[in-house]
Structures are given as structure tokens and as C-alpha cells.
Length: 184
Image (cartoon, rainbow, N blue to C red; front, side, top):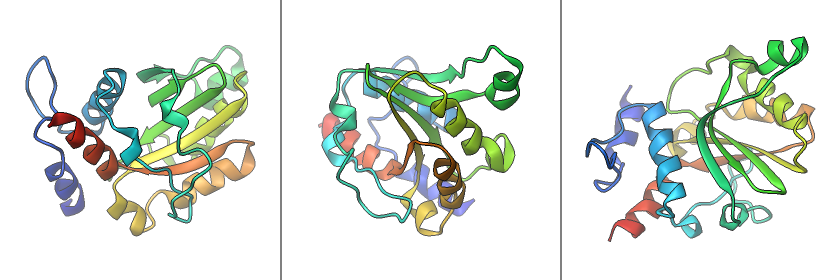
């Protein structure tokens, strides 16, 4: 896929696995490195915006990532009863960000289909809705090009509409810009 290839060409030269020196080549590696660079404070969040599902910059929650929180990648969505297991048991968050007041589930999509079909974001939204943490966010992380083509947006809109959570878009290109500023 040409668009996906172009996205990977935008990855900063300094954005590598510190253990191997290799660049990410897939969605899981990309999420893992974003999480690691986030934990190491190597992402300049001033360069990263949150966008509405209309693909317009928002202001309200744009400083969310400046709080002191915990970041984890491939975090399992805990489930204990039959309904929870049916809904989200076995699913993992590509990236999860937790503070005392916020839970943010970030789903990274780089041209692939949703793992659980069209219901993946809905199931993640339901998980967030059941969370004990007050402020709940579902963020779709992808290429600006994908969002401009309308990819994934309808699924996010449908998921957040049903539950009392906020949904946003986030551009990988802005994260790359934020990393580049930290590399120099």
C-alpha cells in the first residue's frame, strides 16, 4: 500500500529501537516505540494536537498528555464476568495512558483493518465506559492522509456516540515532528 509506505518514510531517522537500532516496520513496533519514547519524555506534546471526528483541531483536552501519568503498550483489557469476556476479553490496548483522573485508550491504525471487525472501537468504548476512572478517552492514531480520506472515522464516531466518552483523532505525523524536535 503506497500510503502506508509513505507514512513509514516519514519516520524520523532517530526514531529507532534503542536495543537494536532498527526502525519500526509494523503497527505493533510503531506503538511500542511511541510508548517507550513517551515514557522517556522524548515526545514534544506541544507539537501534537487532538482532532475532532470532523478532523478539526480541538482545544479542550489538548493538554491531556502533559499530566503525570503511566503509559503502557499492548495492555490487556481486563475482564472477569461472561459479558466482559465476550465484549473485550483478550483484546489489548495498543497504547494506554492512565492518570488518577483519566484513562486514554489509543488505537493505532496504519492501513490495516480492525482486529475485531467493525466492532473493535465499540468494544473498546464499552470497556472505557465501564472503567472506574472518571474521564474516558478513545483516540484513534493514524496518518493524516488516512483521516483525510475518511478512513476509520465513522467507526470512531459510532463508538463514542453510544457511550459517555470522548473520541479524538491524532496524527502520527505530528508525533514524528514531536520526536524530531527531541532528536536534535
